[in-house]
Image (tube, rainbow, N blue to C red):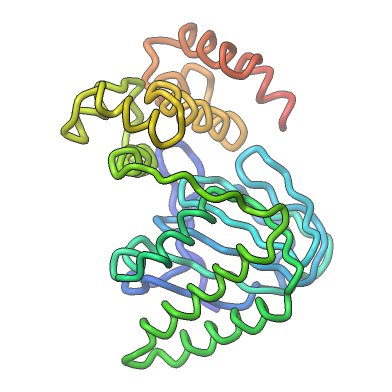
Length: 282
C-alpha cells in the first residue's frame, strides 16, 4: 500500500491524503499493522471506516469511542481523528471525495450520504451482508473498468442503505436542509480563513444575513450566529487539543480581536477557559 501523503496546514494539524489526484473514490482493507496514529485530518474527502475485528479506541475530535466490532465510523474532512488500538484490527476503509458525489446523478445516494455524514459511530448487527458489500466494492475498485463508476455507485448505495437499516441506535430521519444552509456549512468547512462574522459569510454566499439566518432556522432550528459559534468552538477545541499554539495565537486564527475576547467567548459557550479545557483533555 502506498505511503500516505501528509502536509501541515496553518493550524498545525497534519492533513493526510490517501488518494491519488485523479481518484474520486477509493476502498481498501484496513491496514492490520495500524495500532496508534497521530491526530490528523483528511484532504477533502469523507471517510467510512468499518471494523469487524479489533480492540482499542478511536477518537474523533474530542470524542473517544471504544472499538466494539462490528462498528462503523464516519469521519468528515474537517474532523481530526486518530486510533489507539490494542489488537490487530480487520475491516475496510472507504474514501468518498466531493468529486464523486458531484459526478453522481443518483439523488438517493446523496441523501444517504447526507444522513450518515452527521453520524460518528454506529454499531451494526448484520456484519455478514456489510462485509460482502465492502468486498464487492474492493473488487470493483480494483477492476477499474469502463462501467466501474456506475457499479461502485450502485454498490455504495446498497451499502449505505444497509448500514442505515441495521445500525443501532436507529438513525432518525434527517430534516430537509436548504441549499443555502448546506452552502454555508461547505463554506465553513472549506479550510479557508475563519471569520467570526455572519455578515462576512452571507456576503460570500451572495445573500443577506437575514436570508442566511432564515435558512439556518428552517434547516436546523438554529440562528446563523449559533451555527457559526458551533463551528468556531469546534475549531478552537481542535486547536487546543491537537496543536501547541498559544491561546493568543488561536484567538488570532479564529478572528478574535485579542485573547481576552476569545477566552470570554469560549467560556460562555463551553463553561471552561481555553487553558483549562486543554489541560483537562490532554
